[in-house]
Length: 133
Ligand SMILES: [Zn+2]
Image (cartoon, rainbow, N blue to C red; front, side, top):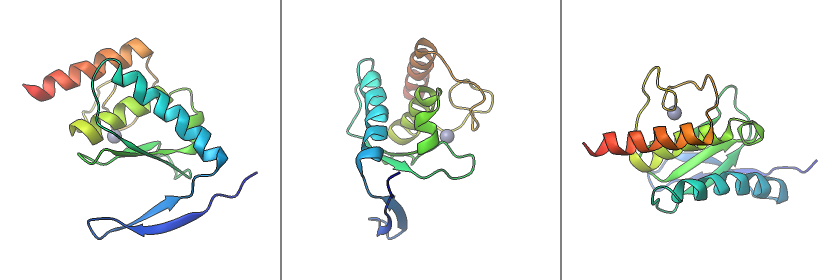
């Protein structure tokens, strides 16, 4: 069991944010998230996205700050079989500013069931298209 070091850091907007030091464990978890981001890049170009792995916080699987190209994914979400769905969801938030839509399979505020790769990709492209019109 490796210790995770957490520290506070001031953001460019003057807010304090909790960060976690990358050790071997978190690095491997981060890799899994990055792999999914590369998977998305194969179907749609993305800017560079910062990925942070966080300690588990109640029921929050991930956070994607609107328009900031940064996502936080909790450790348990990375180990969850629905990680793909969480990553596609957070990327739509942070890169494309897509907000929650009640009842949507990908953008509902609460993830009720994991999607297949094809479902994730189809729904992702649906939201990209919809955002442009
Ligand atoms: Zn969300």
